[in-house]
Image (cartoon, rainbow, N blue to C red; front, side, top):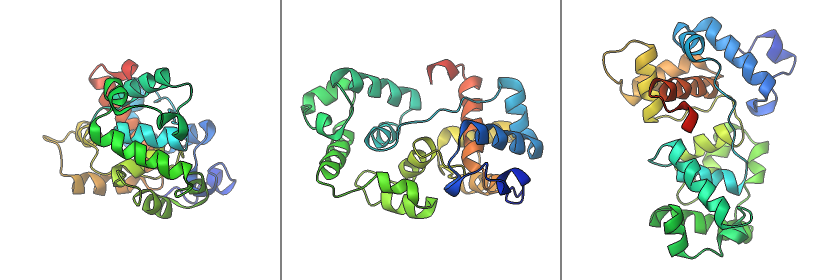
Length: 227
């Protein structure tokens, strides 16, 4: 499955680095469901997944860190509490919050430490999240993983939701692995390496496939409206 020679892409519907728009997102879904029966079945059953995005910059990285080891619904709920606690989710405003307040909002001690250090580094101009939009996925991911508390999955989800990249694949995501098992009719959840091999067939639209798979996972479990 290779989308690089599609006329639409040659005409520039997919911009530099594969940043998705509403238009290119829907086009990408149509290309994927033409070529993959399992993904087509998800869209036929549950409809087109919404084009959910997170803000780039500090807010997006906070959401990505909050989502570590918990559901995206839980991360968004904690983020809403954070929004209620400060006038705007900025590095300066975050640094005014006491550790006890962060705990009451829903931050674990470790996540509070990660985000506090990121806020300090942004205020001191030691890191530049804005610059990531101008570089490719590999380099952007490498720079993100140099930040304390940001591993590959966190970097990938930031690129996927905040920078709207079209081909990042959050390897090891449990929900994605379970959804792949369901659409492929596998008797049990496959190993991460096997899921990554399956996902390779969706290049260069793996992030769009991931959105379809999360849609399957949430709807199958009656959790779509809470996400």
